[in-house]
Length: 246
Image 1 (cartoon, helix red, strand yellow):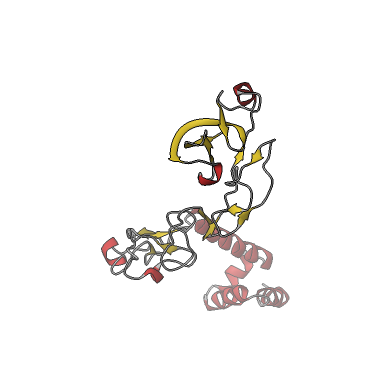
Image 2 (cartoon, helix red, strand yellow):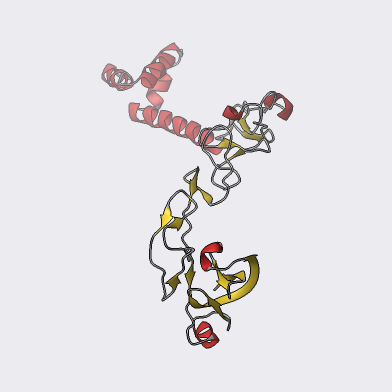
């Protein structure tokens, strides 16, 4: 092999790390002349490229080979001194059972509260309302709104400035042609008798009160002489008993 061809081969192999390694290997072999005479520089580079391609193919064919597997700890070890959903050493979620927060309500996750049964709740129901600490129980006219017990005014069939149940008053006029009685009750008038009650969607029962005839539905309660002596939602029938209004 002439020196010009050998020089060309050396420059070609010197362009990359793998080629330099290959050149050193060729130089170490006693039969240099035979090898160099057999392969051209282009052929040697192509052969090296094929070798590296085969190696990549093997790695893609066995992607999981050589990866480490995680051995999860036992549930007892993972949940020791913990409750609720806990991540183990393999970053998997483990259910360690319900948390009893009654001794420490602050242990509940942020945005929840500790209910009376010792469990952490979302705090969005009337029975368990709140966003931290112990849950509140909404009572009476209270409703859980935005994780807070809020009193909802009740002015249904009420008028005349009576209490709305939340510290306010019901001052709006009665709707649908009803009349406001002296005890703050909205009543359906029936000056023409029971047929007017039926037409208004009530039972056919027109009762006599000190403020005119109104539609009743039965259910006598307290004794009375005037409507003003009866609870809201009732009227005094014939100056004797309070009866529920339609």
